[in-house]
Image (cartoon, rainbow, N blue to C red):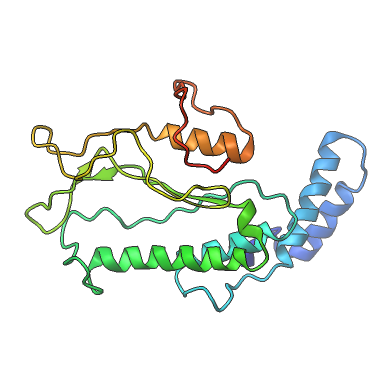
Length: 227
């Protein structure tokens, strides 16, 4: 939260800031120059607006994305940001499909609205062309409903990608015509290694090679990024 960022843990924050500035005023040496750079970043962040623009909804995910947008435009050199958005472990009472009061529908609508506000915000000045957004989950869900009106933990899931340089469409190895749980395993079968799209995006969008030491990318790319 940008509103809480700064020199903290002291009775007098202003005095502590002044002492640290004098300690790191000399440009000689890696420690002093790094300290001076850090204080400069602190000053920049403290001066930023902490509240989300009116185009964002009043929920934590929207506020977090709004602050990422602020930092992207700040010139700080923000390279990557990660936002945690929990509440998807729905073992029961997901709600009927299309029911706006259903637990899953409310959660999915909040996610969709926050992403829409974020991309619209970044599109207003072209920042979206330099920004790639990934929505990734740590585990999948089964497709078949359980006896409690929910779904249980599963292996397979999906990654949503949007923003600059992303090719629209559905990508994956042998993507099935019908999505259903395997009758023998009782769970969705993993068809595409999640490391493949992430590696391709990092390589083509940022110029970073494979970050997974035990993964060898296939010779043929998925095509998830535009040339």
